[in-house]
Amino acid sequence: MVKLVGFIKKRPKLTPAAFAAHWLGIHAAIARGFPGLRGYRINLVDRVEHHDAAYESFSELWFESREGLDAAFTGPVGAQIAADIPNFIGELVRVVVDEHEVALPGG
Figure 1 (cartoon, rainbow, N blue to C red):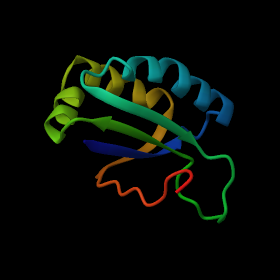
Figure 2: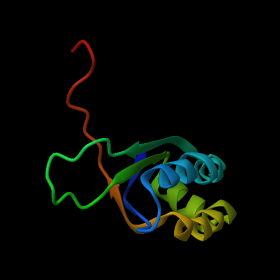
Figure 3: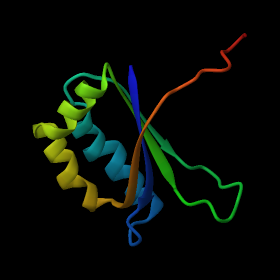
Figure 4: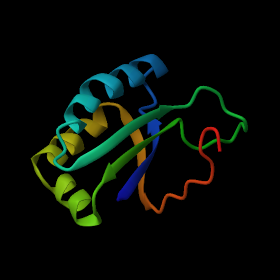
């Protein structure tokens, strides 16, 4: 399993509510069509602990393999995603991560 994390800043002229509505509605509906998508989470920042926090939200997408991730983003759904990003995102940094679970509920 491979995980892609996107660190995101909204377009400056969008309100937080308009940003969230677009992402959770239009953009998420497109992303659900990714071939091989195993999971997708949208994380909207509720509060900031430090005043210099760089990003307002982040996404998490899981695919079976790096090849599957790459194929998804170079296919037709990836093109739709790329075309929609400027509608609500001002800055996006994508990273592929190795996830290490260190605590489980009840453990």
